[in-house]
Each structure stands twice: as C-alpha cells, then as structure tokens.
Amino acid sequence: MLDAAQIKVILTQVMDPDLDKDIVSLGYVKDILVDKSGIVTLKIKLKDPQSPHREDIYQQVKQRVSSLKGVSNVQILAPVTPKVTVSNESAPLDVLAQVSTVLMVSSCKGGVGKSSMAVNIASALSKQGNKVGIFDADVYGPSLPTMMAVDSDLKMQGDLIIPFEYEGIKLMSFGYVNSDDPESGPAILRGPMVAQVIQQLLLGTLWGELDYLVIDMPPGTGDIQLSLAQLTQITAAVMVTTPQYLSLIDVVKGIEMFDRVNIPTIGVVENMSYLELPENQKSFPFGRGALTRLIREFGFKTTLKFPIHPTVSAAGDEGEPWMFRSDTGPLQTLMMDFVNQLCGELERVRLGQLKLPKVSYEPDQGILIFPEDEPSFSVDPKQLRLACQSALNRDEFTGELRQAPDDIPDTIRPLSMNPVGNYALGIQWSDGHSSLFPYQQLLEMASQ
Image 1 (cartoon, rainbow, N blue to C red):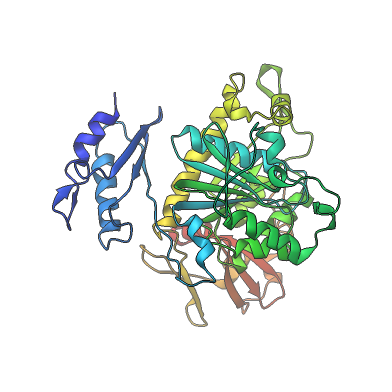
Image 2: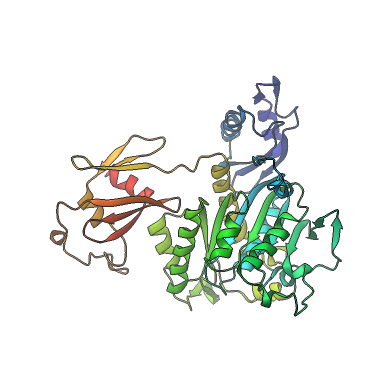
C-alpha cells in the first residue's frame, strides 16, 4: 500500500540545483498526505520561493511521485511570497506576506448558504493539515461569530489584532470586534466607510503564516465587492449558488465581475441541490439543471452539488462547523472530494498553468484556436454558431435547434471574441446572437 515513506524515498532523487542537495535532506518537504483514491498532496517550501528553478523542481516532484504504483494524481501546496512594493502606502500588506493562497468564496445573491460553504471549505482545508484562516468580509451581516463560536477576548499585538481561533483556524470578522453600539454599528455604515472597515480588519490582523486564507465575501456585485477584490493579491474565487434560475443569473454577473479584476473563478457550489429520500431516491424541491448549464456554458471542472440536510443548519446555529461533527460522514466526504479538486485548480493558478487559448478570426480560414500545448486548429463560423448551447439557440430539454440551419447565413462571422471566466470563450456574432463555448467543446469539435 502506498505510504508517505515510499514517497519520501523517491523524492530524494529530486535535487535543488543551487545547493546540489536533494529536497528531502534540505527540509523542503513539509508534509505528505495520501488519500484512499491515490491522490498525493505534498506541502513543499523552497528556501527561495522565487527560485528560477522552482517550476522545474515541482515538475520533477510530480514526475517522480506519479511513477509510483497507486498514485492517481499529485498536488503540490507551495507557498509563494507575494511581490510587495515597499512604500509607506503599501506597508499594511506585510500582514499577508506569509499567506500562500487567498481564496474568495462569493455569491451575488444572499441566502444561498455562502457563509456556511466558506466556513466548511476552510475546515476541510484545515483537516488536510493546512494552516488556514477565515476572513468574514460581510460587515452588515457577519456570520462567522455564529458559525464558529469562540469564547475569548479581543487581543492586540502592537497595532495589529491577534485573530481568534477555532480548532486551529484563525478567524476575523466585524462581528467579533463590533460592540453593537447603535452609534457605530453596521446599520449606519455606507459605501466608502464599509470598504474602509473591511480594509482595516483584513490588513490590520496578524495572520502570520497561512497556507490558505478563505475570504467570505459579502453578497452582491457592487463597489464594495470590487474594492475588496482589488485590495490584495487574490489567487482565485469559488461561486456559491442554488438551483433556481435567478441564482444562476447572479453567478454569471459574479464571473463577469471577477473577470474585470483578473481573478479566476475556478469552481461552483450548487447548495441545497437536492433532498435525499429513503431507498437512495432524491427530490429536487428547488428545480434542477442550473449547475449543468454552468458546466455546459462555462466549462467548469470543479463543482459540488450539496444536499439539503438538517444537520447543516443545526451545526451553523450551534457554532460548530459540520466538517468537525461526528454525524456528518457522507457530507464530509462530498466536501473533501470537492476541496481536493479545488486544491488542484489552485495549484494550476499558482504555477501559472491556467492559460487560456489564443483565438483569432481570418475570413479565409475561419476561427483559429491556439491552445497552449497543442496544435492550433480552425473552426467554421457557421458550424460553431449552430453548436451554441444557449437557451435561445437550443431547447434546454430536447437539445433541438430553435431555428433551421438555413436561417443562419453562410457569411456569418464573429464581431468580437473574448474569454469569459477561465474555461470559456464568448462570441458576439454578426447576426446579433451571443454565444458561450467552453474550450473543451472547441477541442472536441476540432477532433471530429
């Protein structure tokens, strides 16, 4: 059976060219985790996080470990020190200098269970052995003090707040520090004042060394959300939604918002997706198909359908994340599987591997696609227009075209082509129609 000792032995074959020693004897390998499905997670910290040999070392690690029998996937958790401009204005960013990954959990619609998901994603990351923090950025309705109850007083170190802790997870929320004074409470805060409070809390907390800082974003897509998204170096975002169509529309708005500030949206959680019934049956009280549509149109690979479960609500009200309860085994399995996928996508973002294909249009060749590591190919504009999966082009349930192929002119062409999210291409056509195509769909068309 595969174990950490075998992996450590094979990692002695990976050398740091600068020091001419293997990464095990140098102490770079901080932790080795192996799950039942053969996914190996390695926590590696180089002496110089900005080493020019960094990616080569990581590649060697992956190749060596992947060669072992029983390994299905290799994930590297590698802290990267953010580049910070040294000036009086940017000095507060020092509190995040030891934070490797900043993950935003967002929903553009309230009441979808975003805070519950943020808390339990963070809890799952902690149970993997990571150093984790949670920042509750919702000033008007902070949920963290309810969901993670702590019994301790506010403490300071100099001008910085020492974060509260729950099961080793560092916590900060306006709800922990606000006195509920009607003269200074959140009800009287507006726009710039809220942004200032969020900035003071995030950059005024002594976070220390963290593998992951999970930010529970306030709902919406306004100036407050955009300001927070630009406040620090965000690694990626996860959207939380429900099966309803209105929630789906808001997810699209959220993806567009993060696109504007160059934050990759790498995963989607469909909360309250179904209700489990006896005899392995499921009921879908809020409808179904929203997540499937997001996958089809945006190409998301990291997704979670999370059920309605009474323990989830009870755990939140009782101040104990359900990831730490003994009676939520199946729910924990769902979350851990999702978080394992999430870590893989975050690794790709950190290592700069989430690269979008380049696209162009040539009248005599069609739409040209240039993937990063594969041969380029072309797609006929009319064939691509016919392949659009939007509800305006095809019946959502039967998949049949809503208009005859002859109704689309042979001379149709793209007026504009732009990446949407991280896995899809948006096209505005000359006939007035707009389409979204996951890059995977384009690759499949090329192979036909």
